[in-house]
Every structure is written in structure tokens, then in C-alpha cells.
Image (cartoon, rainbow, N blue to C red; front, top):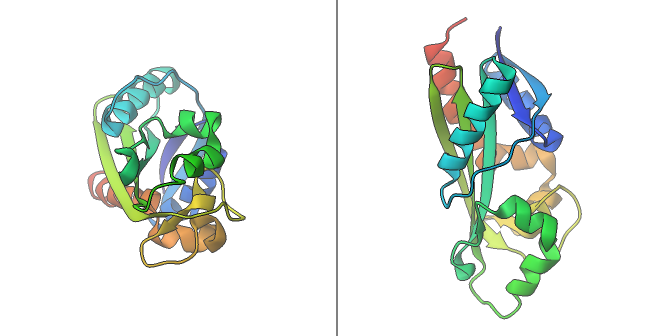
Length: 186
């Protein structure tokens, strides 16, 4: 079985990706890793730099992940600053910012960055949707306010299994896993 490390501080993300990568016969190990993120408007730049720093510290093939929520009527805010915005104003703050907005279109984008010391690549996945009018139960992060396109329920209401069938993270991980299996056969 292939083996790779997922370097992150977020065990919620790890729990989401674990079964998906196992479906590709990739064993994944969680390594708690925190770094100072570069400031960039580009998620790919953030993920690539994070993977370089993680590889220097861990010294084994790994992936890192960076996700942004891009809200149309807020000119793409919070985008690459989604984690900080969630920590400071949370879902209530986002709903307050949208209180007078009719355009609630949003896009979740995930970038997975792979680094083995020689190869450093990114894989992107996106899910279109809307920001709900209120906070629902379930999930973590922005899950209780994001409804994927074609659904009246939020990620939080859908539960992890249903969320993972359509999520931005799944799309990015599928791109990574297909590439990884092709380039690193058992």
C-alpha cells in the first residue's frame, strides 16, 4: 500500500480525507503541523509554501491543504483568509456581512499541495453553492452556512458522508490520488 502524510492542525479535514484516500489504496497518516502562512491572494501559493515548510520539518512525502470560501457579493472575501475570518468573526459575522445582499453565491475551493522533496505540485477542487440565511446544525467551519449547488441543505446538515460525495476537498483529493497512483505505483 502507498503511504503519505497529511500535515495539518485540522483533524476534521483528516477525518474527511482518510476514507477517500483509502479507496485509492493510499494509507495516510496525520501529523500535527502548524506553520506561519504566507499572505497571498492565491491559495496555490499558500499551499505550495506550506508544503515546502512541512517537508523541511517532516522529511517525508506529504500533502497539505488550503481551502478558501469565496463569496461573490463580498468580492471573493474571505477567500484565502477564510481560516482567520472564521476565527475572528465566524459564521455569524459572515451572515451579518450578507444581511442586505441578495446575491449569496459562493465558491469553496481547496488546493492540495504534494511535496516529496523533489516534486511540488498542486491539485484543485471546487464546489459552487450559496450562503444560507441562517446557521444550521452539524459540520465544522463554514459547513453550517454553505449549501452546495442543487441542494437546499447545508454541508452541516448533510453529514460527512454525503458532504464528501460532492465536496471541494473530494474533487481536489481525487485529482491528487489519480496522479499519485499513476506516478507512484505500488
